[in-house]
Length: 315
Figure 1 (cartoon, one colour):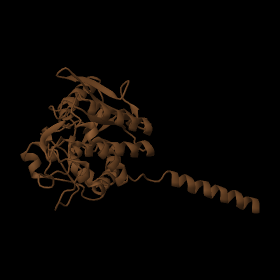
Figure 2 (cartoon, rainbow, N blue to C red; figure 1 turned 90 degrees about the horizontal axis):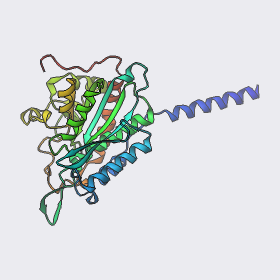
Figure 3 (cartoon, rainbow, N blue to C red; figure 1 turned 60 degrees about the horizontal axis):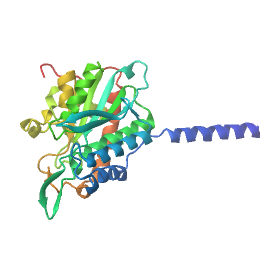
Figure 4 (spheres, one colour; figure 1 turned 180 degrees about the vertical axis):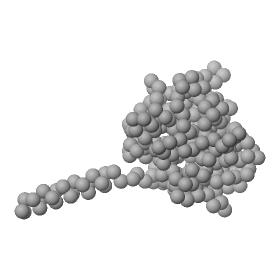
């Protein structure tokens, strides 16, 4: 009897340890701080396309994916193209889905990792570091890559896409969207993250969705999260933000829900394309909360048994 009790105890401990090992991953503020602070450091000189600075950013992202076990989608992590004779490259990580049927459908999580390099000097500083625009979005996508790589909880396949040459006119996302369309990629949705480094003020949602009325994305994300995390922002339509970020080429090529989440409302951040867009003014507690709030909704979208997020008629 004593031996049986010992065996039972060992089994119970094993089960408890196994349960602990599969607990949900929580992204900490320091993790996004580390990513954004490096990408927005003076060492990278504003990450302009075709420069040494953006090369360093690409290597950093590639190493992050390698450490996670996130594989490249192409032969390497780089999707190469040229911009006015200069070499440019999107950086793409791939996590195959674990469902035999749904893994042939793809979800793209994206953000641009380039910036403008230099801007009007202020107090001797001319580097436009691009912390909010868009190291913050990159940090969000990389944190989500960590979550899914660690939990292996995605039924559909995911592409973690960091775009170059967004600041040159969405050139990186256009190139990739055209490439994937030629390959007949079965794209379900594309979720893009842009300027999420500081929180919205006075809103009853976490982020607004560009092209709000083009699909039921906001409604489904709120349903999946069990609270209102995605909302409508009138100025997004006024300034045509739906067509001004890397979601748009995927909407054009694939005609599926492809939209951007953003927390920049034109009043809560005054350093757009200026040298003041530094990591030390980012709110990393907000960013960690943003990521941890969105992950459960993104996970349910990735794992929905059918394509529940759909374009609205005539949109």
